[in-house]
Image (cartoon, rainbow, N blue to C red; front, side, top):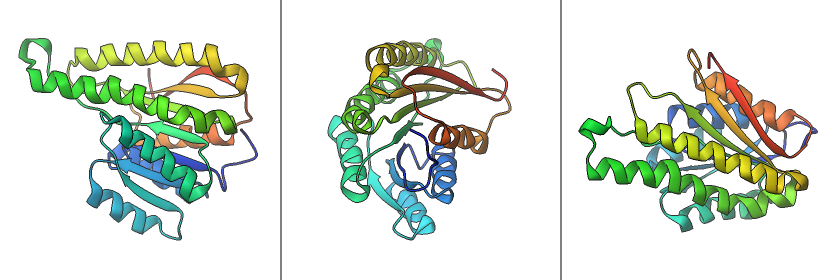
Length: 211
């Protein structure tokens, strides 16, 4: 990867969240064609219309449904010819263990871990063909969330393993940590920087804000 972001293709999940929307807008403003994935179809359709110019397409996606993630990647390939970057910014919060219920447990596992694995599996064939980048955006919870922290640890381990296995093919796996003081704009800038940087596969960890 390299040669600037214009004309490249990125998929953003969840593009309806503040972090994902900021990234999608920043990427589109820099000439990147974006696939907007998420559960809020109305917000995604509105964002697609605002970006305009045939530079964005919205796809309804539930992270826990494997075929939805496959459709997200298929949309990138069919609409724009491929996929250079997938940003996984989806997240489900859960209360502390003392107040945890079965529904919150299932939502957290579905989105924070199962969704990540499905997104990675769906994106890999397209990313391997273009020396692309998979970005996992994680931010500290506003209140204690042990399930999310456990998912973060698992995600980091998974991305490191992917980097070791597939880095030789030029695919990058980035854990992007939004620390204290970071916001969607700063995280979006880091995502755009990954598209601008020369290639080189493997795992990397980036921090925006105070770690």
